[in-house]
Length: 334
Ligand SMILES: [Mn+2]
Image (cartoon, rainbow, N blue to C red; front, top):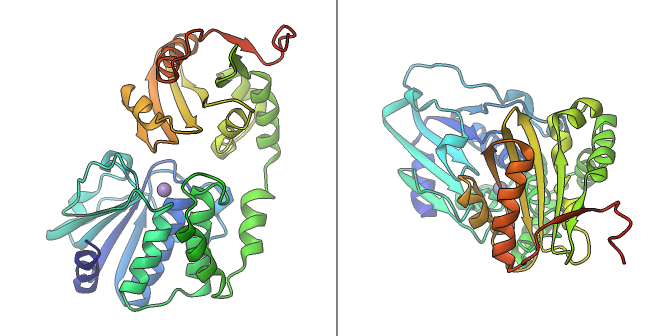
């Protein structure tokens, strides 16, 4: 599959690179590295994303080149989807693809719908950044320190700093190769983990206060209501990683983060530990993702959505009592 990608890239003169909505470190880092490579190969590339780039990632070289999709004449030889399990999660601008143009789908989600003319989907890759690293080698090139920085940021993001189950020996090997380019790993650490907004911390405090857990301790849930969101005065990026506080509690197998995005619309983030597939769980509600991390958008009031999701999570775990108790409830530890 990679050979097909290599020849498609080599023969293209123009390319449209598409990042997924609510862009994360993987789609941004992978997209920027590929963008830089295409530019070095003398091709004209455009990077598009529907949503703004979170502040956290506004240090990656080239981030300010990422633009909102705009109508264009049909001139692109390639449309390259990066880290998109589904094309609906990316800008809809295929009208700017030339009639002979091809869609390349480069992704690592097991739930990828193989929507491309060429599909390169590797669910074993910890991050798409890892795949781009191989692609660069297949193009007989070596990453510059700036490109390495982008790929390293993508791998650090998608492996949760080399902590998640997708952290394979290969992920470490590629990270080592990237570090050897002389890139600044300290910058990634500082910008990703030591650069939090005050609103992020306010949201964390308020969200932790909502933590609920089942009596058997296997499911933990956090809820960000619209009131909480307003009180926190936070930006969207503050949500990132929040669910991991629920996931990190001893004994928790499934962690959920519910966010009331508007009236009767609740975004649910799912995280699992062990061999529970929350990707399948999210799919039951029209969402998707990885076995260990997934998301879905549900309709209904928060309490009702919570009840529906809890029932499904409970049946996945074989947990008979899915009633929730506040983490602050004094009877919990008795
Ligand atoms: Mn990814």
